Length: 214
Image 1 (cartoon, rainbow, N blue to C red):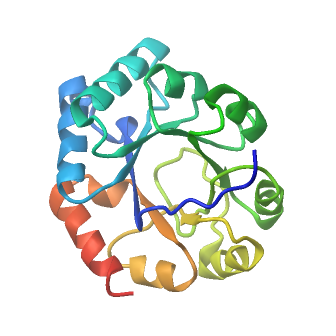
Image 2: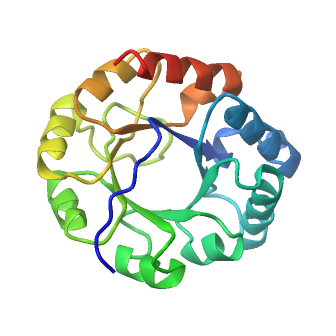
């Protein structure tokens, strides 16, 4: 399969189930939250659940696919097998997950494949692989991970931009207050979890408004 160039939306929304209070980790709340994001303009949504078992993850994922249909591209975090089982559009793997080669062999040639990188050496290796986009960070301090990698900052993002022509997704601590600086440093897309949690439709709309200004 030849390398290909996809175009990512400017906002890469992540629905992180573990960021919800325990009582809200229900299928109905998760789908309702996703619905608000899509109504706010989100075109690509990653489902991330680091604490759920396989059955729970697959149940959530299939309901997201059923309710949202093809209004939004759905990306499964970590699990290439569940990406296929839920008929998602792609999978995102980290440094401790299935390798990009392994993930590609599971999801096939047509689904989207992204990979997280936390330093320039990892990014150089990913750049040589048949992945569709590269996520890089954390740009700023983040609470989304229990043991986050070292912050790379805007300078690190600029260095990453100089290395790859693949779509570059900035991750880690990105908010409406700093999104302009992140985009100016070379990110094609910004991954956001925490700053979408309150009033998700309004937050998404505001992100898009800010991203149109840069």
